[in-house]
Amino acid sequence: MLATAATIAAVSICAMFSQPASAQSYAGPGPAPVFTDNFQTGNDTVNTATGPGGTPTASYTSYNMNYDKGTGFTDTISPGDLNMNFPSSSSMFGEAQAVFSSSPVTLSAVGDYIDFILEFTDTANILGSSGGVANELNMGLYDDGGIEPLPGNVATMTAQTGGTQGWTGYYSQILNANGGTSSKLWYRPSQISNTGSGTETLAVNTGTISGGFGNTGTPSYQAVQLINASKASTVIMTNGVQYTEDFRITLASPGVLSVSNEVFTGLGTGGVLDYQFGGYTNATDMSFDGLAFLVGNKNTVVMTQDVSEIEITTNIPEPSTWMLIAASLPVLLAVVSRRRRS
Picture 1: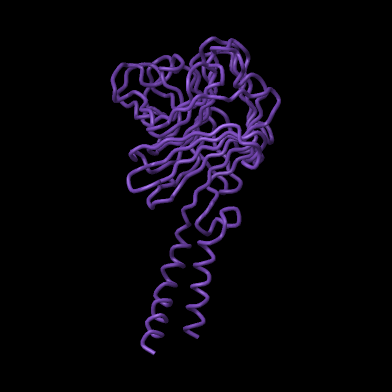
Picture 2: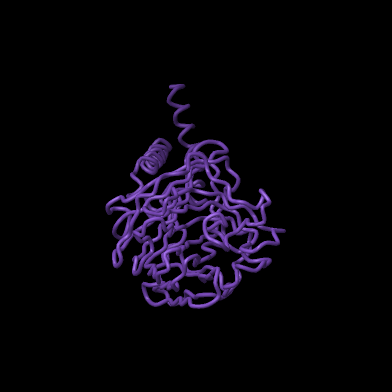
């Protein structure tokens, strides 16, 4: 009976770690859903102080909008759609900020990752084709320190305290193909004690569009580019086409994080891969519970992004999985020892 139990345990453990990611359930080593929002629950809000809720596969939260200009923006949520509409401007950004979990995802073992997938339609002019105009598409993951975004924040050009000011994390900045500037990956440091403008901004720095964070000239507040995290942009999006952006942070080795970003045509990561790049950095933040995504406009056109789904996944097992493994190993070791003695 002991041998049977050990055999079952061994088979279960081996099966758990040998399945392809697509076949693994979220009780195993991944990918495990943390937050899945397709705006169908009726509980999502815009610009309120409500935190995340629901289940890992049917989630909701408040998406708080952060702009560098105070008027002309409209944001609505309807079943299957978060609509973000931005007025024509030669220098502006619109950023959605949200807390996605009350329990941060912490990367602790080599190979641990957290993955952020954004499915959306380029309804109007997100990454256009005008030569020399650096429109951008950004997204990132952050440690919110237990602080929610300020609700209805539309005044980033003035210094504010609280909210996302102290958030830290990593983000991707993809420029359109004719913008004349390479796409990059950045570390966003805390802006606590920064008395300049843009201290609530998460996914754009002042070096690209006015109103970003870290514009006081103090190095500790400025964005830090990740190592090897620059690539000439070749992305031009088409109005009316659906896209998926995939942003992943992985603990690649002790103390080193690998960060990557991919863009696919179509919904999901099974479509045509349009663009990918990555970089790495010494790990500054290992825990994540906040997100942001952004479009920046320097093309003086109206921009509209319709987001249909947001997914956060990880490969870190639930505590119950590790308890099963821990409980099974002594039985397995006892049988192995017994067999050796015999």
